[in-house]
Length: 255
Image 1 (tube, helix red, strand yellow):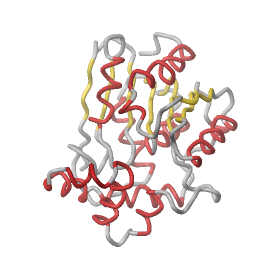
Image 2 (cartoon, rainbow, N blue to C red):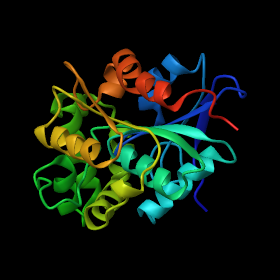
Image 3 (cartoon, rainbow, N blue to C red):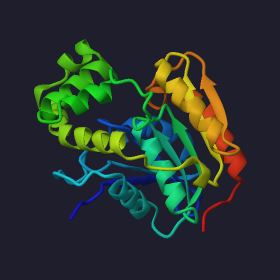
């Protein structure tokens, strides 16, 4: 049985926000953002299956399982969901399938890997090509995302842990390329879509597409920010991405 590691902060009576991390990340990456929110909201962060402190296992990593994990984190509450990168697809798929649980969604530079125009040269696409060697795929992904110098400066134990997460990386990204996880015409909650001026062109194109196909979605560009904005620019991300969503959702949304 998969055990998902969850940490919550803020008053239990406050409305719930769930932060969902991307590929080869973990809940710790969303800590700065959580601290910007937990004085007014109950904020949940969790390590997705195959990452961090959640139970290591060999799968499955299909979107249905990712959604089930998020629903388990929400429980019998109602939540606003903020998804970074791959986590944005989990947020939107959950909003489509469980609209009664989701009050609103914010996504940032979320990959549309199933689209025929999506580049085959991204870090994720390269990882899929290394599917038979998940540890090597994880290392190659990390080298591209954080840079060679930062990767090589990590302690060997840390690098070994991250290599072991290659199983989750390869399988979840391969599933995303093969199966469209959500449908724009079925998303009925408020949605804010973001990207950064320092992000890749395909991420901006993808976010423009999402904002243009989900009715009422708001598109926001963060000046001077890159793909890791929720980590590196938490204050900007909170004020320009999360706060506009919360204003649209209205409060309280908890139950």
